[in-house]
Image (cartoon, rainbow, N blue to C red; front, top):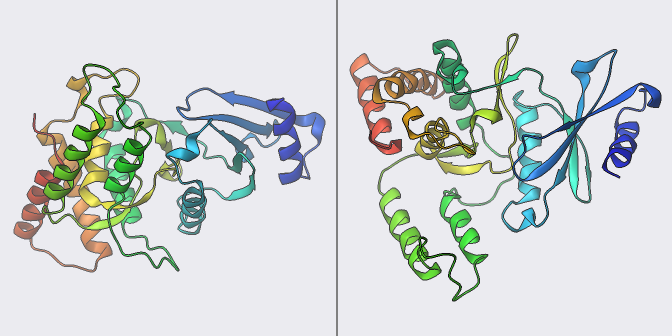
Length: 282
């Protein structure tokens, strides 16, 4: 059924393709969704992706926000186009290249491109957004907690819902005093959401969670992703030397985008401040 539906969408989006020439590829790396690629042998780089949302994912992912994000990213030249929307999914362009792994993400040239690309993304603005700028972090955390029935116990190793709510309140009080700017963030910059393309550098994909958030959160979350998702390896978390070099690449571009000329001493102060705001101490 999935293959038949995917072919129907491909015929709609790419009417010039001959049906007999269309191939399907099922991707298995997704955590919350099912993903199918449609392409032809003549132009495999023009593959389109069809994403079918996972069951009940609308409870914790704002799909309208995701669509807005994909349109915004495409206008900024960061993301391929969004072709169509259907009842339980979307169809959009493919980003050719190689997804990162724990080795590629540490290569100096690659991590420099990631830092620069993220600084550029953090400067994006959303047109016609009348909301007050506030971090989405606590709203999302509370949305997750609201999915837990009152009075339920998850297991004996996880605090109850009331305790977790208190922790979120304490976290909000602490982080709101750090002074980290609220910017447009990816919020899910794990390694498989970064594609290396030899022609265009690095590209970010999957903007389900993108929204305004603390600048330091987006960077700190990216560093945490070095340790893995399915297989958690704390030793892969980057040390201070790596983080400082990464942050310098970011700050230099961030200052340029803000038209700010800083002395070397001022840049070092910015780096140390951002390091303190975002980091987990080794």
